[in-house]
Image 1 (cartoon, rainbow, N blue to C red):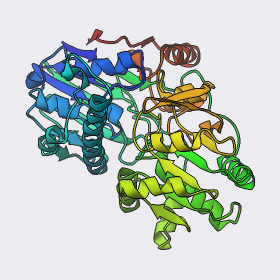
Image 2: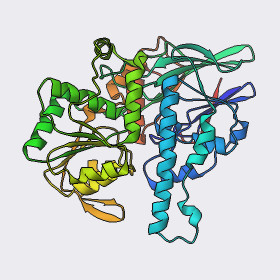
Image 3: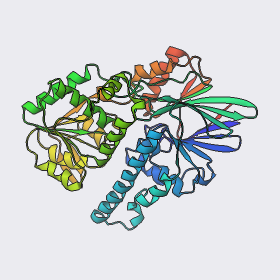
Length: 464
């Protein structure tokens, strides 16, 4: 009998890992890190309840770290087989994991210099660049759409998820004992009518459904995102301030580049310096330009006209640490886009330490801010942010722009679910904080009358 274990993204937004066992084989869907609070991140240091050496296959929905960031641990701890993903996801995963390994080494060294611990292992990185390199050799491409046989036991159909480049929802067919059982993994569902990417697609039907619920308890703010961004930029520039945008290097950065370029072309905002201070984001932007198979009609039209919608007029690429530090010397209005999106690490911390104390400046929070993250603290009105061992006063204006989220809001999640042609036998909600998952559970029961539960961490369910 097939069974499914929730190894992550259950009761929380991050750490996506789902173990499917059938016909004597084990398939891992996603392999992400937990992010946010200290307790959540401590889970990353614990071994899986199943030995990685006994897992036969692994497949990725997309390249965000909360879906792929634990792969170096998986392979270091004994997983020897292929890791299947869309070609764009492979490129982005390679990029993000190399960057992640490097940043973790830097963070561990910085912590060792500042703290004295009786056990130095407490400050070890989760993994290093040396752990990443052999793992990358196990990545293997699978079709962007259509069917793919992982093995005689597992057949996969991929559908555009519309979340980031290469993101997919999966319909998995399990073949066991002469019987077929299907299960949909939504992955992260994107927005409808967003820039650059195609709209999300819903797989047509399934016996079981695993659906994300990140924004299951709320809608994104109403309003025209272009106009809101234009009004914000003009207001901050008028008072002589600068804008810091903590943005995920993959997805959110490219959206802001696209929209800022459009506003410049339409002369709705002044042409001020825009610094993209994330080497990974710059490489990811190249991938976004090259992988046209994911582009929506508007982006495709710009491609055909040989225009570059991701290249701003006064665009500064800061690849080196020295270039990043020089941004501190810029005293005139500018926009700084830098990772990480939840302010959990990366170069954006330095920019916030420099810009937060000045009330002329602003910080735009444009994506989900996990519980326990610095981004959530800013969102909830923190007056002090602890950065590099210092208490930094928060005097800058903090602006939340949910219009730019890459996750579907509540009504969009219901719209995606309505694409199923028949009710699943059972649905489980994952990838959401408890209040969000429970709200979506109630909405799905009310709208569709489905049997739907909120997944619990480490629970195993039978797929009968």
